[in-house]
Length: 438
Ligand code: GDP
Ligand code: GDP
Image 1 (cartoon, protein in one colour):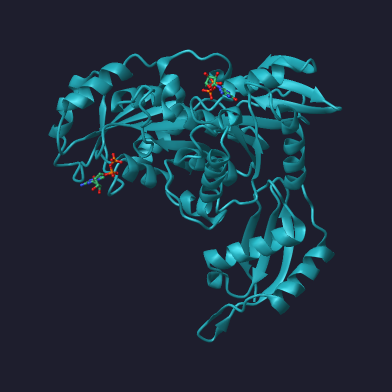
Image 2 (cartoon, protein in one colour):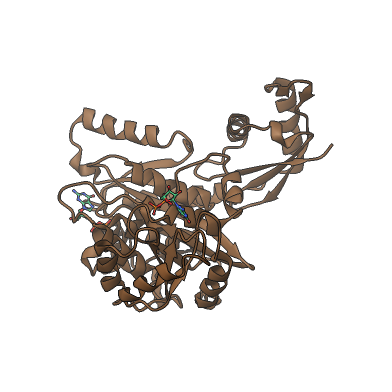
């Protein structure tokens, strides 16, 4: 489980510029996994071998629905800080201290986390020292000059951030062979209800073991001789604060849970349909290699056929890049189809562990060469020499080709689709790499 570094501050101070700067080249690697660029508010980062996740709170939109607490910048920042291991509070040195900065600072003082006050946009650090002084008034210690744009000060910053991250603890897993299952989704989708239904009706709970990580309490369930670890984050079982309703929580908690899971159960409120935020969370799970099952919860609310169709339509529209995800209609309230979830989990986990034999892969490649598209660019023609499975969980394949740069996103998807038609992989992401070999 990777530590989380949250970047907070009012709009336009340079948060996303900073996040891109700090995440550096890692992003390219993240994108490679699916070859599709997406709007992201989280980034994997690595500094001297220490891995962590940077979360840009600016990229997360507050909930828009009226019945829920609408989150201001300040509340977003507090929620972010409470969930994070380290907080980077960014202010704009070219503007000076604003009222919003002061209000965020007052609130951050209450959060007992390592915090860095970053005065951004000081592009000429030698000449702009005096601009720093006024930020002492925020009462958050020494302000640090940085330029997200030019990179001044960011290397030293990373050294210090990394030194504040919690030690990497070996999780003392009581059942290392248990399958990790995470319940994720937006606030109010029904995650807690489902969790309680699943463990409440089930007498085969092995144990409730407090994990070594602060906010994770996993529940082990045994069924038909198979063990499952229901990855929980404090939010699912006991809801405490008003901040529960902040989208940010569901994002970051989802992220933490996904990191520790093999299969993600995405709970979608069928009364609302699949939203953009659901789609983002689904993408998080896919990018991190989790198998995915979409649970359309509150199906009991949909009594009209046309309502049901509309909801299904939102799912296919949002999941065009991952049409392989299995969808199950449930009601955590009535218990409808809740029992079926286990089969879906098992199937998705089995697909994720699939190993394809070399001979089957060779036969597939022969087919692809014979009946597939020809990829050409001027005089260059893409040739696929051979393919091998380099990993499972999720299945990962490396194609050795003459010109990897000829492989476009759409060709990559084409090959993926052909592989899915041939081998299945229902419910699991797969990864394709194209490497040079002449
Ligand atoms: P966010 O809303 O906090 O995520 O801010 P952005 O990262 O989108 O940046 C807002 C604006 O500030 C953009 O026009 C950036 O190019 C600019 N900016 C960000 N960092 C710096 C910097 O270090 N120096 C200067 N001069 N401009 C910057
Ligand atoms: P969470 O924020 O995702 O954990 O959602 P909760 O489990 O707290 O559920 C939010 C609300 O939706 C509660 O009022 C639940 O009673 C309700 N709810 C959950 N599941 C269902 C369902 O299947 N059908 C209906 N009608 N309501 C549900």
